[in-house]
Each structure stands twice: as structure tokens, then as C-alpha cells.
Amino acid sequence: MNDTFVTIAEAKQSIVDEFSLFDDWVDRYEYIIELGKALEGLPEECQTEQFRVKGCQSQVWFRAHNDDGRIIYEADSDAIIVRGLVALLLRVYSNRLPDEVLSTSPDFFDAIELGSHLSGSRANGLHAMVNHIHSYAQSFKDGT
Image (cartoon, rainbow, N blue to C red; front, side, top):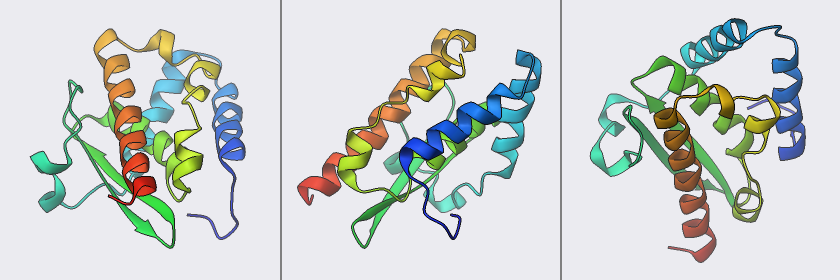
């Protein structure tokens, strides 16, 4: 995380701005792959059924913990493009208050036109990841 605090709206706009620099989808996919390669990921011992996101064609794992009221998400995938999508989700949703997470839709994916360029199974997986993120946020909000 940067030393300066970035709001969710700023994080989403930053992603939209970055993707607007690319002229075509080949370049955008290459950028997503680079984001995936740079993702820190999860230790292998956390890549278990307990943390697996159901509904994804690829293997995807998320875990979260509370840090002074903020949710810190960590995630990984065995598919490099999905890792890139995970990296984008973490930029927006990690280090946020539960209410912020719950009130934020992944509309930035529409703004960068990613939804129309994902296969049906990847789009379903993206939806499953967002649901998983919101589920964690609801649990933290409820204190469970």
C-alpha cells in the first residue's frame, strides 16, 4: 500500500486512467498479465479449500484480516490473467472499512470495457470474487 491514503473512488479512477493509455486489447491483456506477475500472492499453505473462491474456473484463493477496522485482503490464482484481475480488485477493495467495501461495485471493469472482453467463465469468476470480497466485508461488519 502507498504511504498516502487513496480513496476507493481514486483507486477506481486510477485504473480507468491507466487502461485508457492502451490503444487495443492486446496491450490491455499484456498489462493485466504484468499486474498478475507483480502480485505478491498467498503462501502455498494458504492455497487450500478453506480460502478457495467457489465459482471460478481457475483456482483462486482469498483471505482477509482486520487491521484496526480495515479489511486487508490477500489473494492468489493459478491463472496469470486471473492474478491480474485479482491485483485490480485488491487495489480497490483492500485496506478499506467494511461499509466502503459493501457499497462499492466493480463498475470500473465496465468503464475499462473489460467485461465485454472476458470469456463467460472468467466473467462468472470475476463476479464470484467480488461476491467473496463482499462476503468477507459483511462478516467483519457483523463481527463474525
